Length: 74
Image 1 (cartoon, rainbow, N blue to C red):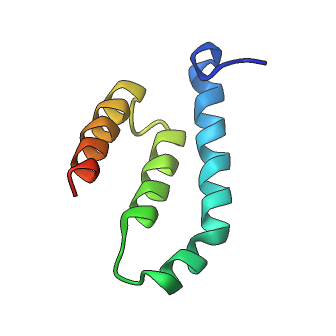
Image 2: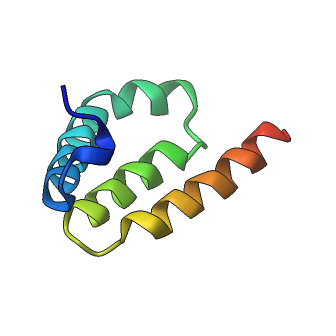
């Protein structure tokens, strides 16, 4: 089995598009429980932008690291 590090950039983008499609299917369930929380919708939009080639991997990794540290302090 391939690890994420061994996937090509185009394969990573394909996986991101698939993940966004999967998340879109359950987004209404989340939004029903937390209507004011836009983080999942934003994450799906960013995954789609990455899949289209509008974002790069390194920038997204840095952004997620910063967001994760901020969430941990809450």
